[in-house]
Image (cartoon, rainbow, N blue to C red; front, side, top):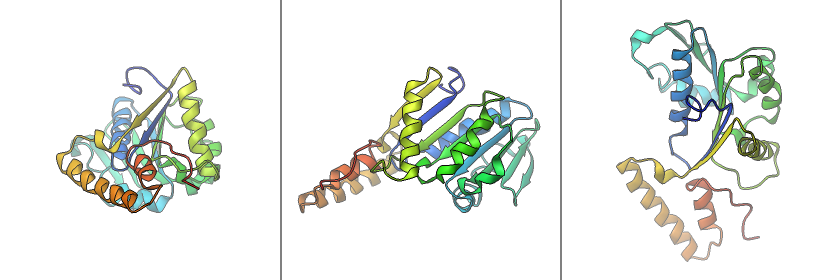
Length: 220
């Protein structure tokens, strides 16, 4: 809704683990490509190797829509070209020097806190000419010390502040998958057991990793 109905330019999802953020992001980016002819669309992971392992080798992008909409699949580039001349390309923030000067139509950052902190500075000016939307998603960091952590918080606050921004927190249990909910219940029991044994930070960790909340630091 934020991307397609409300026209938001910066959409930030702070999610618990396995919420489905990668699928949500791919849906938005592929739909943008399919509904905007000749669109240049990019999905970025922290590293190019992660992009290949997480999305490309699993065929998630290549099979996201029926084959009749796909014109070409370029394995080396991790690029899928669609029937209307648009494409979605996968890459990593470690390739930031390659992305100065392009003019994308839409883009996504997945797991922002682990990005090379130089990437956003290099890439985001590219979104201006076409007023391209940027979708950012990730599990929150525990602190605000490293460059990646500071960038995560900066973009989250920007999304909250901007009139054309959208911010949402999504807990892992909001994923309505019975098998996952059952697994999540067993995971929570493990955290509760740690807390019962005196681990004062166990439930804070649960809130961050699966509740999608920002809980700074630990008991020390």
